[in-house]
Image (cartoon, rainbow, N blue to C red):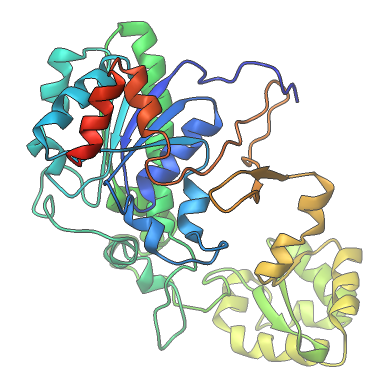
Length: 397
């Protein structure tokens, strides 16, 4: 990795009217790749994600995760003076990202149609719950609500209870698609010379991820059953208790692995020919009976013994780590995947972007305090110190 090399998005400026997770996650990835990201926040409290919790030495866990390497500019967008500041920002910007409430950006004069006339090279990325148009256009949307609307909850959890994902997957999905769409739009602009509008819907982002269960239930067929942490249609593929109170996660993908699993892991080779289990469909249909046999075989074995049998048989497996286990994960340590970022509460550990490059090092800049860069950004836009002071005095910034 060349720590001195140019990054792919060096020279690109992104202005973001963002809060919560979807847009901040998108723009943090742009910042990782070298873009200058100017995050516009409410004067005073800032992005409301700053107040979600205080788990990171007084800072919000969500905010620390999604806002490194950005500049924080406080600005009251409803004030008349904000219009000139936004014009100056967008004059030199390449991308505007926003995930304000439905219709809010347009009411502020920040729709693509309005901006394209003044800034024809500007790319505008609108992230919303349901997208523009349709009966849900103006409906509020949060991550768990989209998990529900997308059908995710209907196939996730136990037989008796749906269960949400343990992280903000709808926000993450929308943020990822917004990120990739912006990269595509930048490439397109190289050909056309013009910016374009990107309309990213949280619902559509999640429904894309629901492709397997949707096609599984094609033409009115029964959907996948909720099976806890086990796979709904491949078995055995999920968690199993072992001796000592631990849990092992394992998965089989084909009939060869099934035979090896029976012979070398369970040490019951004859089980491979049991008519209840001779195909994946039958193993899935008879999962309760098979689970009982596996649990019994593992009952007197430690997790180390079960893991060794699985490894020797080349059967995929994993430990069920908690967060402490992830922080200390030996693979992340061995690959030196932890870096550090500064913050208002001092230096914090941060995971490097998952796709490492041999050509450049990602930016790992500070998590900003509310409005930390306001004066510097305004000065870079040509405002004199007395004008900046007046903006502060009148609470425009």
